[in-house]
Length: 231
Image (cartoon, rainbow, N blue to C red; front, side, top):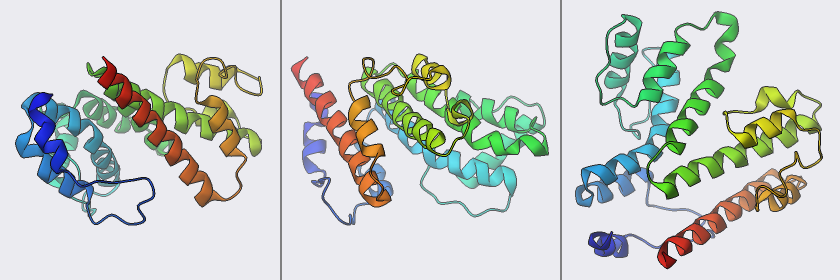
C-alpha cells in the first residue's frame, strides 16, 4: 500500500458536513484507476457494481432503456450478458458471477414474481461483496447489509408487515431478524452499532435520520481505518 501514499494525498479532502461535492464518483474512478494495480482495480470495481445493478434491472425490463455511464459495464456489454444467458451460452469471464447468476434467475421468474428482482439482486450482490478476500471490504459489505436490513425490519414492525419478507441476504444476523420476536431482535449484544441504530430509528425527520445513518457509517469507516493503521 505504500505505493499509494502520493495518490491518496492528492485526492480532494471531504467531510461529512460537505453540502455539495463537485467531485463525482466518475471523477474519482478516472483519477484513481491509472495508478492502481489490476488486483486493486477489482476491489474498487466492487463498489461501482451497484451502478451496474441498477442498469441491468432497467435493461431487463426494457432493452432500450437509457442508463447512466457510472458502472463497470456499458449498456451494450450488459445486453450481451443478458442475451448470452438467455441463449444458454457461457458469458464472458469479465462479468462477476453474481450478475450472471442473477440474470439466469431473473429470466426464470414469472410475471407475478418480478417484484422480487430487486431483493434477489441485492442479496446476491452483498454476498458477492462479503466473499471478498479483502477483510476490510468484506466487512464493509456486511455492515451495510446489516444496516439496511435492521432499518427495514424496524419499519416492517412499525407498519405491521411481515419482517421476514423485507430481509435480504442469508447470514446469521439476517436469520435473527427474520425469526426473533425480541424488541432488539437479539442483536444488542451481537452488533455494537445496533443500539445507536435503534435510537435513530425513532427520529421522525427522514432527512435527519439519513444524516444520522451517514454519521454511523462514517464512524465505522474511521474506526476500521484506525484498526488497519494499528496492524
